[in-house]
Amino acid sequence: MSINTTANTAGTTKLNKTFYDRQLLESAKTRFVHAKYGQKRPIPKNSGKRVEFRKWNLFDANDAMEALQEGVTPASQALSQSNVEVEVAQYGAYVEVSDLLDMTGYDQVISESAELLGEQLGTVVEWVTRDAMCATTSVQYAGGKSGRNALTGTDKLTVEEVRKAVRTLKKNKTRPFYTGGDGGARKPHFVCICSPDATYDLQSDALWQDVSKYSNAEQIYSGEIGRLFGVVFVESTEAKVYEQSVRNAVNAATTSSISFVLKHEPTAQEMANLSRGGGDIWVSGTKYTLAASGSFDRATRTVKLSAAASLSADAAVYTQDAGAADSANGYAAPAVHATLVFGADAYGVIDVDGAGAMETIIKPQGSAGSTDPLNQRGTVGAKVAAYTAKVLNPLWLIKIEHCVSA
Image (cartoon, rainbow, N blue to C red; front, side, top):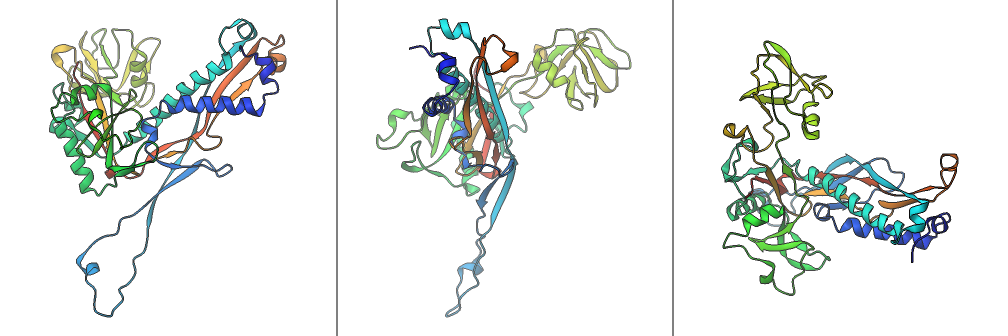
């Protein structure tokens, strides 16, 4: 049965609204991996744009606290919490539905639109959460390397890297998870979120245990692919990947000039990076700083530096925001993947299941008044009313940066 937008949305019933909101939310939740494991906080209506996440501070242990004197009651300890405040933001999108499409389309336009918008917003929420998690200060570089731009194609995710991360979490007294995907009890564990490429490399290790080795009584998270050394692995296609954002060349030689022209038409990613004033850029192995303002003219492909430089034609222009640059291959650098290993309450998120957090907004044909004089257009929109994510304890969230097999 097709949905007539005008008939069904001019006076949208509460039943339809509830149905579309539920469809939107369910479609969005199928995309959630990073957003699933954070400490959840609701944001009450009319309470401002900032939300507070809290964690209890651990007590310090020392010999004096452990020793009691006979008949003497020791002084009590004071409970304390650490608070982290962060501001929420809104996210949304919509599609236009013409009256002709609504009348002639075979599919249920509003229902399908709500599902597609849910998947889109679910991905956006994933990216926001993922990027917040990747801001942790606890970073482990594969192969013992000192930084991201030192990683090469051989520095992959291995069982040894996972063991190192687990050791760090244990030494930091990280609290494990005790429940599964549906809240049911299961063995204490940490969680690891990794990309399919990282999984491919890890599964070549003989020590890997796949899902078939699990106890049937143990709850498995959605997307869970295995368990190793007390770590549950969950795969995500949205895992963070750091790629070289600029790889171009100098068009013509310059002499003591603060600007030069790129040889190749820049990509959107290159333009975005070069437009960030004050950033670093490398030309034939030498690091330069982009001008604080007006660092890139998109119309002329001109890059402006903070100081004059003499550059050769065809000299490689690149960034070092991925793996180690290879001078023998046009300064290409391998992509670096971020694998996250963490415990409970390592980060916080807004509860998207909460009332009003995610909603569909349907405007029927003719609702726009004089801007739609022939009642030709309606819209189906979706909005995340308020969302944010924040690392609460960086010692409890380890980011392993590594390369992957081709």
